[in-house]
Length: 463
Length: 113
Image 1: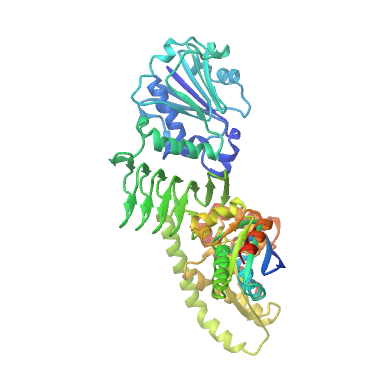
Image 2: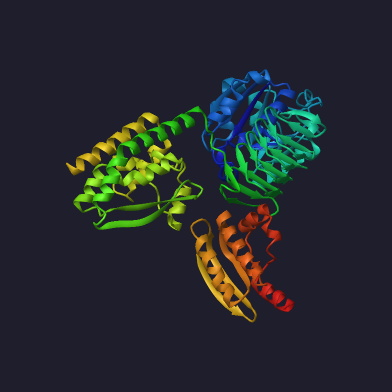
């Protein structure tokens, strides 16, 4: 038997907002993607070949499921239009659908089954063209793909049920239900040192950490000292729970940092986003001290950081004698002297630097800018790791700008700005487009080119 | 962030609106001691506050500390779910007494005095 899974991302707007770049099928229920439960069920029902049909392709999903080798089946992928009907879906996948009995799972839902039960017979005993549905999806069975064009409700009693996944509350409730009552029903990731405790690989557990079942902790999670996890807690892959934090009846998704001494109860956290189950409301908090996403910091991050600091140090060594001489020579000239506070990151954290140089229009001011002496204060910030050597033009702190940077996905301020190299007018649409483009496509070679461009351009302005 | 101060018998009532974040928290932190000089018991109406982060919470806690030092208190009214979440995860909901609405808060607190 074959199975065809079909989803349209537009059906799940709330999930899309909260889980951002995660495909709805990759949203995890008790640390396992929702699609994997469906896949397990299809395999238990005798499927050997599965086709995933999506309106928007997803790389993370493809990387996770691949060709299905991990499950011992064959997985293929196909695309569909946003409003494809079942008929159109069958027509577009005629070759896949027509040869043998077919199971179609369309929409986003969860199947409650038991891994030890036998699901090989229910479809054989069913009449062709039967379906079972919930408010967000339908399960269809046909002895041939053509039978599925004439459907009727399934009357036979079956040993599984469907639950809708439409809202964050559904994801939260299902996770709690699986953890509390159905942990034995599914193959969940991790090993169990005790009943109802599942722990993944490479999990670090600090001193005096309390674990209260039922709970599940995914690979690479870190629990620092005195944290209390459970009952009813799911901790995602690579999550970090800081000291003294208590998590019960709560979900912490992959790569999420949870700050010190917090109490997370009846909530779900994804990166900087916080969902409260009793209030059925969510908030984009993204606060370094409370909750935030853990940005992947691989070898390239450390290499970039080291190059940034080294280059900043070299520039400082080169500029410092000129800067000191300049300060002595211009101690009696008219100067701008003010402190600027700018946003350090998307989360709204701030950094300040003092501007203490002759006014731009004077000869001294022009000379100072030609040698980039106006960057000395910022270069010190690069050395301390606060900003990059080359990055976005630092955005001054204000309520309007906070809203701007919250939608600025890769904002990272630098001593030398991308748009500065292109001589774009500050505040213009071209500047914003350029800043966003370069920030999203950062490369070390580009950064070096931008830096040299600015240094040469500054020198030329004086000549 | 907008602030409107009203005196209600022995209580001070401040209507706050906007976001209590890194940008605005400093202003509130500086102004709370002035309001506490007028009235050591302050009821903050957070009905129009849409967001509060660690800086905003820091400003409220700093005010509460100063109020307690004067034998006063700061209480909250009309807290929206998004702000309540920040109070809950930090345990600050146990430090600030809160009321579902301003009228109820003023009446209940006045009757305690």
